[in-house]
Amino acid sequence: MRINRIVSDLGRSECRFVFGNNTYSFPAAVGSGKEFRMPDLEGGIDSLAIKYDQREYLIGELALNEDRFNRQVRVRDKTSDPHARVQLAAGTAYILAEHNMNDWEGRVIVNYNIRDFSKNKAKFQQDLLRAYEVRITRGKHTGKTIRFKFTDVRVLPEGVGAMYSAVYDPNTLEIVRPDLAKDNVAVIDIGSQTCNIAYFKGLRFIEEFSGAWDLGMHVAEIEMLNFLNDAYDYEPNIAELKDIFEKKSIRIGDMTHLIAPEASEILRKHAGKIIDQISALIPEADRKQVNHVLVSGGGSVLVPYLKPTFYTNDIQGLHQSRWANCFGQEIMAKMKDA
Image (cartoon, rainbow, N blue to C red; front, side, top):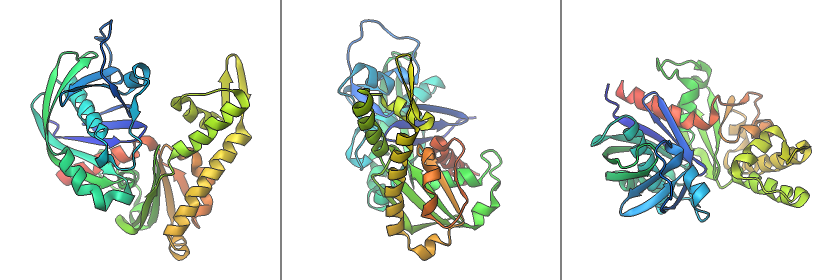
């Protein structure tokens, strides 16, 4: 069966894609193209280099490893950074090459932070609605030129997909959480750069009580980085930082250091900043009416510290929380096609 859509979550630390029953991801980094002494004919999506729009790029892990001036997409507004489109072009080209597809036409479903959604949705749609030609210059699809065209672009607020991933079965599209489908629900979607809150009454998105702030996990990661520099003269990479918050320990050489009190305090302070913003956005009377709180994205480690935000004990991190937006966007696309 021909697949006519690609679902993407172009995050600031990771880009994720769903194509049919397949998932793909790579770090959200873009670097300048370069010559390599040794070819790589085996590498996957994490060893990708492309030529697109008359320029050469390193993508994902390859950009992190080979270009110390690589650019991670950290800007608040995806419409103002052309690298978001480069990442979408690279990921789509690789996926189509994997499936031996060329001259593909279809639609793409992406998301955008809630704060700037209304203002920038139309511009982001127009920016992506075009024909693409991408030549893969490194990895197992080296030498392939992939052409494709997005004939339709659907942009959703971040957090909406996460809600649908919690409510619906992805295969049958039947409701598996009727309580979420009828109650008041707050989805706190914590990415690398931004923290979004999406408020639902039943399945109706309430824009008035939804918002976003630059309070993604990078804020806590910087705090942790400063602590480790001062206390241990140690500078982990981003991937290590994520593990440190979960394990609350670090390994330097052959020594393991327990840092649970320091990690917990950093997370508590960061959660406090999020709580302050949510409290300013949503009146206390409406926070009291929230029955369930779902946490998606990379901030599941904050769940214990976010409990004072609302007047419910039902606050939980979503299963596969980093993929919740993508999976939910795929469910919404299936429902539209059904």
